[in-house]
Amino acid sequence: MRSGSSVCRADHGAHAMPVPGPPRKWWLESKPSPGASEALPLLVVFLIGHAAIGALIGIIVAGLILLTDLAGIKSLILMSGDPVTPLVLLAAGFAVLFGGVYSAAAVMLLPWD
Image (cartoon, rainbow, N blue to C red):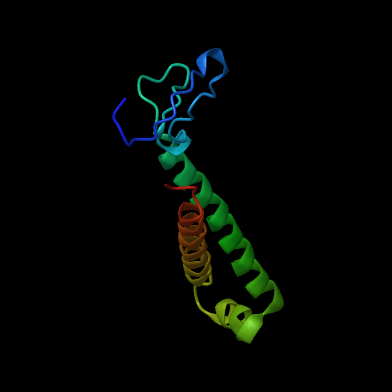
C-alpha cells in the first residue's frame, strides 16, 4: 500500500451486491414470429401500433365533428355533388394528424437514456 493513500480493502466475497448493467432496451429488440424468417424490430411495431391507435382516435373525432355538424361542415358535405370525396379527405386528414401526434408523443415518452 502506498503511503498517504486511504484505500479501503474490504473483502465482500459472496455478500457482494451484483452491479446492475445498462437497462434493457426492449424497443430495439426483435421478436421472431412463427413461420417468419425475419421479424420487425419492436420499435417499428411500437410506432405502427401507436399510429393505428391515433388514426382511430382521429376518425372518431372526425365522426363527432360530422355528428354535431360543427361549423355546418356536415351540411356543406351533404350539399356537395360528390359527398364521398370530402368525407374521405376529412377522415384521412384527421387520421394522419392524430396518428402522427399520438406516435410522436409515444416516442417522446419512451424511457430513453
